[in-house]
Image (tube, rainbow, N blue to C red; front, side, top):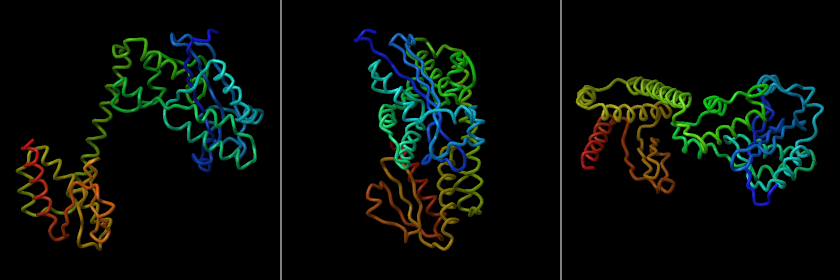
Length: 322
């Protein structure tokens, strides 16, 4: 192996799961590693299972998700011992980072470290891997111009990947899937791939449908409290954009009224840096905490209709000036 040759490491981990094994108590069950050079020639594959300390018995959910058997987990070494081998591979190929997909692996490894500490066991190799894990999902999604994050199975499948054996949610298969995705994005005209185009269109359509459902729910909630005659006339005079703004503001006010039924005075807060809106009872308003707010207005339960009309008119006037 040339000392100047550079390598990329892709990794996936499977962790204990089930009702009692939420993220803060999860432990590593398996790890898959794929190492390739910058031309995507695979130099090494590594796969191993490990036996948890706190939850050595697999839950039904774990068995169904990972297809791991109790027999192979029970006969496996400790995760720190398994990851010692991964550390040696990282050193051999001079790899500083292990690319993963999504934000699940780092919390899982952190939890495994916690369990090792609780059991008085060595965990230095888990720490080394924890520090090396690098989530590349957001950057890859941005590079591919995907409308939203896509799970690794769908994305790798769009690029023609089918596991040699087993299925996804298998650590080595998912590490291979990430390798395939990375290779496709950096070495091919992936935007011309029909399956990738179809995947993007499917995601866009799902987003459109979800947005339509959300908007209809907001509309139903906004109009669950009867409109006054003045509100009806004003709403009827608005264009489509104005109607959306009217519905959203009324929706948020109705939610606040339902959450705080005894409140008579409310405050409307908008934060300039995020555009986030809050509507709270006046007595819960803390001016210091809202120092970054770009707009703060007070209104009463009896003046909701005039407040909504005023705010929408102000928004329309502001939009016309731009």
